[in-house]
Length: 175
Image 1 (cartoon, rainbow, N blue to C red):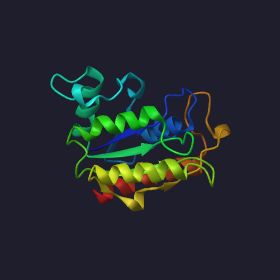
Image 2: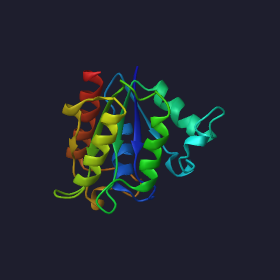
Image 3: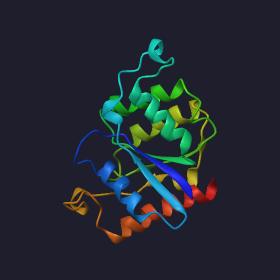
């Protein structure tokens, strides 16, 4: 079974980014297991002095999940033209470890056209710094309007669901 770790850049309970990843988990194609990391808000502020064993528990859990995954898919909102601070903090904790180095990764942007480009630009820069295997055919925009998210927190639109399944299939196939 090919495992893809899904990492949201949002701590907001009603986030369309997190809804997209929850839905990706539900529609994963055969042979792919999608696991959602839900510990973004639990990470302490990055301090290089704390990047030693024993790691803070939330950091150890994150790094363990990244290490266990065959690939990673990111989905983040944009705050003030760039990555949310909490998500950048997650990425900063990733720099001290080697779990992402060479790992196939992709991103999706669920914002409307013309929005989210600053966050994706910054994310791409950081990912290249981390020397990941950026699977560009699996990266892209897949707009998720708020009204497409049902009361269960999942995207109901079949076209979006198909798009999410294809992103996972492409990421797994490229890895």
